[in-house]
Length: 228
Image (cartoon, rainbow, N blue to C red):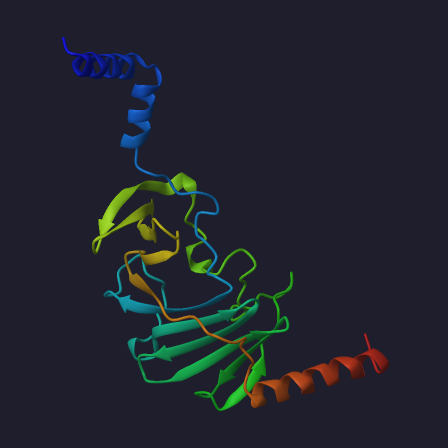
């Protein structure tokens, strides 16, 4: 046996006798698993569009489904730190806006002509229009958890984590753990991430005017509180 052959023989003998080898191979064979938090927050400066696709109403759908002419078609959310701008387009062509700015939430009504403050929910009264991003930027995916993680699959040439719970399914990017799509049997959501904003968001003047009026009203209540 030549010297080079002996070196090669000893190398493989050491390699095969190593107790770490089977474990290392096992680890490399296992697919990656999602980390906590399962659904990542979007970056501090981010923008994404959610496209809605509806199926025919089925018996498990709500008793009073939204009329097809007035369904959400797409939602674009833009975020800079704790300021959010939400633009909603309906299948009827109607467009609405919501802003979260300095802890206050606004929305437009009457197809964008009226701006109003959205009241925060209380123990006595719910507020369906109030958005709560305290737990993450994708509250519609709050059901996604480590418990309902299933597998890694290919999606349009990229790897994705798959989650399932009952009729609900969701795919998250394996690289970012940001959502790719979700489906509950009646509604399919597709997430597209846009170019991020380059400057902090500031609501238009008409929103700021409503905010100023609202704050003046709060100040007035301090000195002239409403009777019990």
